[in-house]
Image (cartoon, rainbow, N blue to C red; front, side):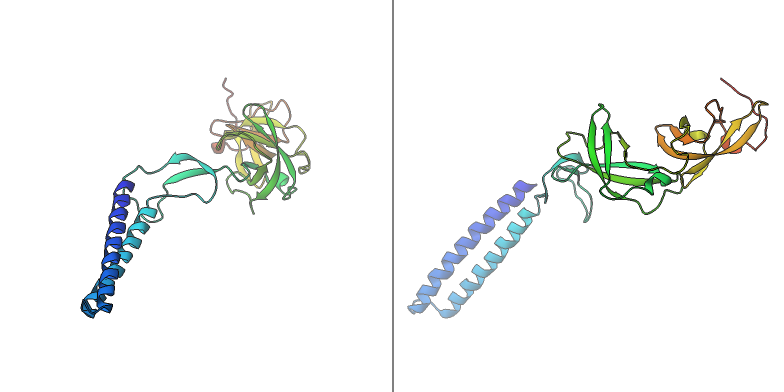
Length: 255
């Protein structure tokens, strides 16, 4: 408890002051020949030890306070007061309110290839507000499972947005790969097969009720859906059990 360490520091300060006064008094008496020099030396040593104890008590008191090196807001507490914690253990999650708020988005590799640091973008919050932003950095490679690249954007000025809030990102000056802007559709993400490097495959049901494997360009994921290009507008895709279907296999359409 901080109060315990504060009381200990006060006691140490009183002890150090008392020992200091005693050392000064005996030093004066020793100079006048009224006290042995050895006694004055012992008193001086005791005063030094008391000062060392005071420094240690003040250090212990300082260690009970956590001071942030930047203005911020505590958004999560990971330990309770009085709890014993270990070295390096996280105690709080703090939102930095002095630095620009960051937005993190996952974009297809074909689109990420055309993004550069400083490039403008627009972040749309859940309440419909559009905020100006600029690309801060992007990951060195795409995620193996989805083929998407993580891009971070710094939002301009004070936004009032909450840390961790969902948002969508647009890049007005981004130039997607060939065909990425044509025939964009949303399909269930579970229909994707072997998504990698901005491309994926799906099974499309033909007129005869058979599954035909088709390659598509993966443009992004939104909730449980995937945005793809390269499918006919009236295409029917296999969703349930798509990973177990063979090309040309007859499938049953359920509604």
